[in-house]
Length: 412
Image (cartoon, rainbow, N blue to C red):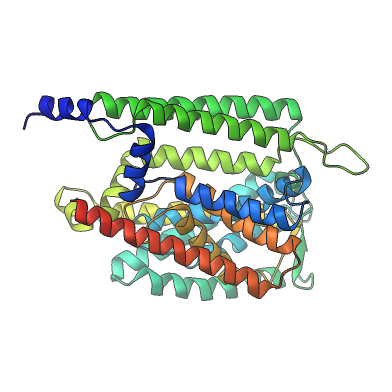
């Protein structure tokens, strides 16, 4: 059958909007729809239990909590897309944050940007080292990065305790502290969001339009408009939340700078994955490494790049992790952080089997994890129940991913 005949058949049998959505959901291609529905359900439950949940102050706090989960999930995504895993990102982040705090202490007189760059360089090199060992020795990334987790925990304890401050170090640099604890003005919050939504909407529209005009499988124009409209409405709601006065005795409003960091990393990660050779090859290797190798792709090179990107992004998470409480300690629970990183990425829709995922999935997954922890903390529920709820959500997400993969395999 010719392409024109296929296009003609599609045009005459094009389903309605509702049927198109249901078709995509049944095929395991629902995108963010299932997890967004789940997020709305969680919000409704917590609001019904405690009316404070949807207050501007609590929601802003929730978004700030989510920034660290989101960055850790983004870090994990680079290797998950290859079908690999990095169990060291929690302690890599902790070590990066600790190095920045130490270098920015007045006794060392480092400029704030230099201290942060060195911290990011260290975490990137950690990723490169673990990636090199995994690739050159042909070892499972699970084992190599588990060893990295244990080793980095020891290094972190040694670095922090060596400062002779009782196992904790306070942030002394105001710029570093303000990354999480200061805000844009309400006016610039509006400017930033308007520009950001406009740019993202343009790329969404262009991507869908290009696929439709090329005769490739794509969503209808109506779905594209709905996606852009939902993005615009959600952004306006978020701005109104941020710009509400959250202070009791002084005015406190505007978007926290930590949100800007996450937006910047989302834009950078999405650009690399969708607009560069690195991103295309990472997807190809994760989908079928042998086929990628036969196509002439230097598989080991791009696996190494993915591990380095994981280290760099973990370092960014570490900077926020250290900035939020205004310091670091030798008691950082990097093991728990990496589990939450994997959970956030998978809950958002990233496949554990490689080849499928987007950076926006890390954002949604991080918000789900933050919502669970924030809501249960408001209800004064014990940590055991928080972990249990996260486990259930993670199991459901992995089960849905497995079902979707089987459905796609049957469809082919």
